[in-house]
Length: 469
Image 1: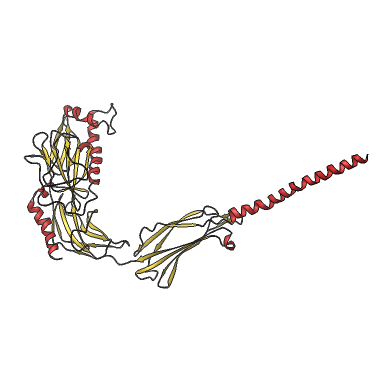
Image 2: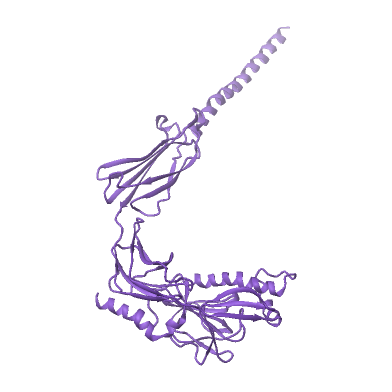
C-alpha cells in the first residue's frame, strides 16, 4: 500500500511539471502576438509618399498642381503643402484624413488632390521659390504622430508672357499654298510657331546666328479661304502665351472638278490588292470594297504620310527650285475635286492631294531637291512611297513607285535617282504621284517648282533678316 501511494505522488508531480511549459507558452503567445502585431502594423516604419504631376519647374499666372498621396499600411493622416519665397510662406493646402479607429489606423490609403496656384493672388512676385510638401501616416511611431515624409522642390514663378517680334513683312498666301514667317522670341525654351485656323506649324531656331530668331514654314489647307486667322503664337515653360499678328493676304483659289468613271475591269484588276485591308469578306462586292478603300483607307494612308512629316531636321538642305519628273505630262492637279462614277451614279467624292505626272513606263524618278530620306514603305492606296525631309518642316513625297532605290536615313542630292514610276497602290496607269508637305499639310507643288515664287516668298525674306542681324 505504501508503494502505491509513493507512485501516485510521482505521477502527480510529473503532471504538474508538464502543465507549466504549456502555461508558459500560452502566456508567451498572449503577450508576444499583440506585441508583434503592434510592431508590425501600428508601429510600422514605412513612410507615406506624395507624388505630383508638376511637369515643369515653372509656375505661371495660374498653375494647377495635381498629385497623389499614398500610405498602404497604416493610412494617410495629414497632407500639408506650402509655397515659400523670400521668407514668406503661404499654405496652399492643409488636409486631415479620417481615422478608422485606434486599432485599424486611417481610412484613406490613397487619394488624389488638385490645387490651383495663383502667385499674384497669393502676393508673390516672379523669381525662385520653394514648394514644400509634408505628409504623415497613422503609424504609432513618433509618439503617435506617425511617419512623416517631407519634400521640397525649387520652382520659378514666371507670370510674364514672352515677347514676339515679327521680322518679315507682308505675306501673300494662296489657298492650298505655303508661306514663311521669321520672328524673334524674348525667352529661351519657348514653344513657338504659326497658328493657321487652329493648325499649328512649329517654328525652329538654328538657321540664324541669333538663337532667339525662329523660322516657320506654314501652309493653308486647300479648303482654308480668305477668312482664315493666321498669327504667331509663343508659349513659355510656365504656360504664359503671347500672340503676334502680321500682315497677310490670302488669295482665294477655285480648284478643278473632275469625274472619274469606274469600270468593272478596273475594279476586278485593282481590288484584289487590298484584300488584306479589313475588307476580305467575299460577300462584299468589288464596288463596296472600292468605296471602303477610296474613303476609309485613303484617310488612314494620308494620315500616315502626314505623320512622317511632323519631325524635321533643323537644316535647310534644299536650294533653288524643286524638280519635276523630266519629260512628264500632268494627269491630275493639286486639290482636284474628284467625283467617282459607276454605271452613271456618283458613288464617292475625294480630293487629290498632289500632282500626277506621267512619262514612259518605269521612268527614273529624281529627288526634287537635296534632303534626307525619312520614309520608304508601301502605303495602301499610295503604293510604294518615298518621303524626303528638306529641313525646317518642308517635305516631298513620291508615290505609286515600282521600285525604291534609297533607304531611310540616306542623304540624297538634287536630281539623284531614288526610284522608278509604277502602278502600285490605287493607280490608274503608270505614273508618279508627287506631293509637297509642310509639317502636316499638303501644299501645291506648283509653287515649289517656280523659282520666282521661291525667291519672292522664301529666299528674299531670309536674306533680309540675315542682313539685319
